[in-house]
Every structure is written in structure tokens, then in C-alpha cells.
Image 1 (cartoon, rainbow, N blue to C red):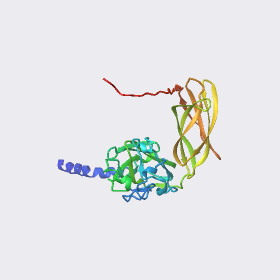
Image 2: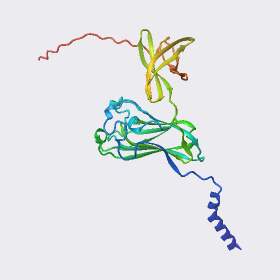
Image 3: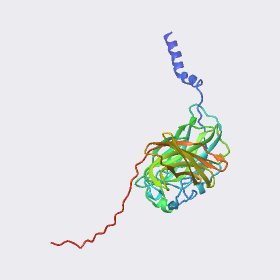
Image 4: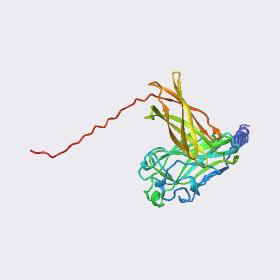
Length: 326
């Protein structure tokens, strides 16, 4: 009898995982490349400025899937904050894409795959990728030298894979942003976005312009009265530059003063410096919106501080050194 029960227990242990697996929801394993920038051919010549035009880098790109072309809109080089030739700051490279169908399993994932052709030999960057504002960062490896960026010479290709929950996707407009947050440049071969098969693209989103954020600065000007400068970060999902007006007000302790300032908004990410009236020596709040023909943007607000005004004096001076004697 004991032998009979032992055999039945052994069968249960053997087949239980299969029986339980039949009661669990199936995970999506078929991933498809939803969109791709570049050819994934271990070359940089098919991208903007490639293979040797790094010195002409002038603007952070905005790539609209279904509308933009890689050879025109996505530079082969991504400068880092250590690159003074590109402004010595973080450069966001932004991708916009429109999702029309979104069917995924509960635990499904998506992957942003950055195929790097090469990286700086001494200060390889730490690269951050954000999907709809949620980011992850990976370190690149050191490259062999500068021949790749200067003349299209051999690099040291690598692959950076950034995985996110598919639940971070949403119907309509989505964004992927790539940044080099520490270090110097890296070069692109391609950027790919993999999703479960149940995710489908829709037509590219219509053009829009929006203020992403407003930042206080320590700058102060007189034009002609005392003013303070705030930095307005704008995203323009468009193919051409447009004339716009920054409209808003600044208020402090019940005192409010309006302002307007004209601006030219180019495609992509940009920072516009805005002069706002300096009301007093107390903290204030600035409210800004972007106005274009036929489009009135949403108002964005931010606190600003009463930065101290400094005066600089230039004193004429001359000195003649005729040497020393014993």
C-alpha cells in the first residue's frame, strides 16, 4: 500500500508544474521592432552629419516616427556634458511616436535598444533613456580613439538595452528621450524600439508646441527697467520653425504685472530666455504660456527668487615693470 501511495505522489510531483502552468496566463514572448532610426549596419553615414560632421552639431533633435528621416533629423553624434564644443551640457534627443493599438499581457515589457558605433576613449558617457518620463541609465565602454567621430574610422560597437514595463505605454503620443548625463560623446549606429506584437503604430501626431518647464536663473538685466531672466524649455513637434509669443505675468504679495516677448521656435527641444519684471526683493511666481497662430498653449507656473543685483566696476590701471636690482 505504501508503495502505491509513493508512486502516486511521485506522479503528482512530476506533473504538477505542467498542470499549474496551464492555469497561468501566457506571457507574450514575440517581440517586434515597432520603429527604428538608422540602418543597424555598423555605419554612421546614414545619419545626420555622419560620418564626420560633428563640428556642425547645433541643435538637439526631435524625431517624429512616420514623418522624420534619419539622415536629416538624427545626428550620428550625441555630445555629453564634457563636450565644450557642443555647449558643455546635457543634450536630450527626443523621439515622438503615436500608438493606435495597445494590447499587452500584464507583465509584458518593451525595450529601447541603442546600438552605439563608438564612445569617447577617455570619458565614455553614462547614457540615460526615458520612456514617457521614466528613465534608466547604463554606462558605455571606452572607445579606441577619435578616428570614428572625425573621419568615420573604425569604432567599438556596443549595444545598450533599456527594458521597461509595457504598462508605461499609452494610447496616443509617447516619447523616448536619450541623454548622455555624464562624460563625453558617443556615436549612433541605430536606435530600435521593441514591443509585444499587440502594439501597433498610428499615424504620426499632428504638429504641436508646448512648454515643458520653466526655470529660475541667477541672471538679471535692465531693459530698460530691472528685470529677471527665466528659462522656458519648449518642445516643438513640428517640421518648420514658427513665430511665437511668450505671454504671461509675474506676481508677488498681491502685485501682478504682465509681459509679452516674441520668440522664434524651431523644431525640437530648446530653451528660450524670457525677461520678466522684477517686482520687489521678495519671492514671486511667474506664469507663462506659448501663443502661436491658431494655438493658445497651457499656462505653466514656477517660483522665482529675488536674486541679488551685483555691480561691476572697471578701474583703469597700468603697470610698468622695469626689473629688479640688487
